[in-house]
Image 1 (cartoon, one colour):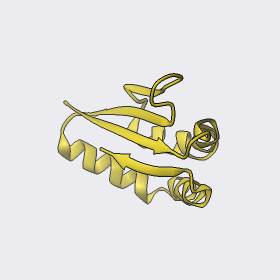
Image 2: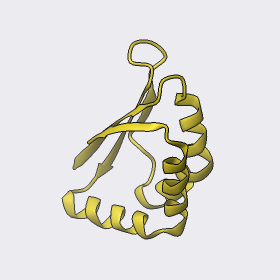
Image 3: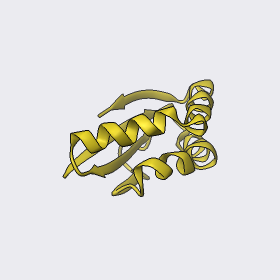
Length: 94
């Protein structure tokens, strides 16, 4: 098994707005292909403008296959457009 650990830095003061965009446009499309995340977290203290999530895969081939299907999904593309239009995502680390 491998775990994809992702950390996103959000524009200060807009974490909740970012999460609302994900809830409305991204969650269903992402979980349709990746299943439920191992963890989906955001901080209320410390580095408060950060969202972290972890996704588990059988192996690298499983990850590549599931992510390719997600990126081919028109609903996921709508989410990516909404996220880009928001300008709230400052950085992603994987």
